[in-house]
Amino acid sequence: MTTKEKLVHAVEDLSDDATIEDAMERLLFLAKIERGIQQADAGQTIAHAQVKERMAKWLK
Image (cartoon, rainbow, N blue to C red; front, top):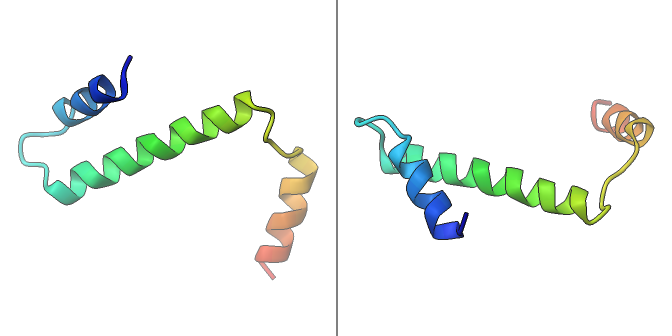
């Protein structure tokens, strides 16, 4: 599916009373998911233990 097709599909899935802000939020969410999948496919991930370690530091 092309980017344009993904955009059209995402907009068509919005409710009839959706705002431009709703559409922007949805598109940003989908873009972040796509970027995460690309990063995972490229091996740009970190181990679960590293995530736990980073979270522990952030939550101090």
